[in-house]
Image 1 (cartoon, rainbow, N blue to C red):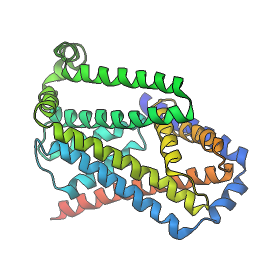
Image 2 (image 1 turned 60 degrees about the horizontal axis):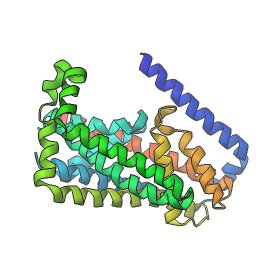
Image 3 (image 1 turned 135 degrees about the horizontal axis):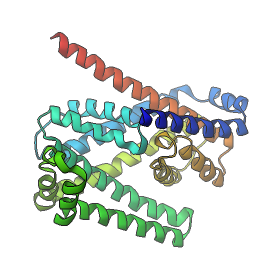
Image 4 (image 1 turned 90 degrees about the horizontal axis):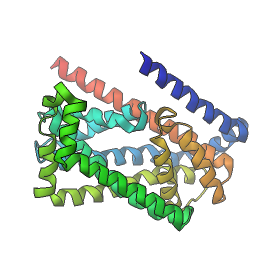
Length: 308
């Protein structure tokens, strides 16, 4: 009950921040900008977003195939649902709801959690590297060096937790305690990837980069529909900054914080405020429409299976 109330407060605060941003620009100006958008180009945005979800689903499949082969279409459906859930949970934690679906496919909880953790670490390493490169252009070399050190520390800490006997022992003893048996197989799978499936780690990193590039095409398409041609490299660099603030649990999934830093950075490269606001309004509609589609699709599939 307390957690639900806290999430409501975070959501309300995020909406409050958004309201301040949009009111400052002018609701009438934003509506006028959106109403003048190119509808045909705009329809490409959800298609690109869904494609990026499909790419992400195959990334998880690449790792989960070492334990049990799951059909690509099933993994895509599961990813649609978990992506939808992630929009309503802080820090993208909804992605770990994939554990439920992997377990349903016959992969034990410990091994499923290990697969998803390795996938997240690879994704953070890839996006973090891109963020460091971007920071050197946007914020200078000094700040990018600090970011590189933080990224390096996080990756080392994650590897230590995964592969150190000491850390695993402490987690079992003081955190998991009686539940440690549920996560049996976690370490085994993590070690297995490094020993026997290095190529899968490399391919996973490549797919993570491809997914990030596809995600960048979503705002690129929206800007085009609004009559503004923004360089894809700028969009990708600003997306890195948005992802960084999205994990801060002040608002629900970074709502309001992402848009605030986006306003500052897009304004710094000369994008008009009304265009920036239009990009975020359409982007939010796009994301939550696809999320609703993902939830409905999974619900309908369950009904069909239940009737058979």
